[in-house]
Image (cartoon, rainbow, N blue to C red; front, side):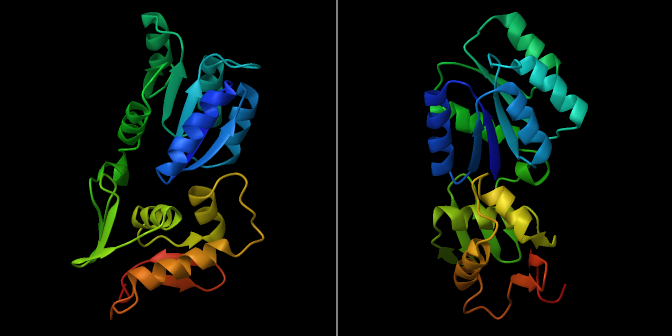
Length: 224
């Protein structure tokens, strides 16, 4: 899952980015309002963490721009302000949650997971055929067999399980599993798909991860 962090305090932004990456999220970080609007408009994010006190354009103005441009990602406002009127204003203009600094990272992660409980995000366990993944325990299984995954393999499998039957291009996969620094000229997506196949499909009669030649990949049962 890909998260956009719009935070002008670079130490705070780096702290959030490091923690989210350890939780298998791909993270883009920007430090001012106008750049945040540009990133959110140009990319598809699964959630946005937005500071209110930003240079160039404050968080409330950024939210107005999100609405104007049709940005769909759920937004968590992050700020040092704790006045009730600020919280109310933020929620009234479309924010999905509000977290006041200083905060415990565990609370940020918990609230972020709640924000993304929409559609398939609301499922406690992602299941497709005999393949399952539990985001809470971060454990994957094929039938009764546990699958040991690296951080990126986990992120890739989670994204595919949230989009079964959908043909995912290499670009779409890269945008959700890697961050803005991803080099589109590399074959890293294909490499990780092969790693995942060796763990998910190897030794099973029914294969789940399929190549759509010239396009990308799809998670589906062979007879679909």
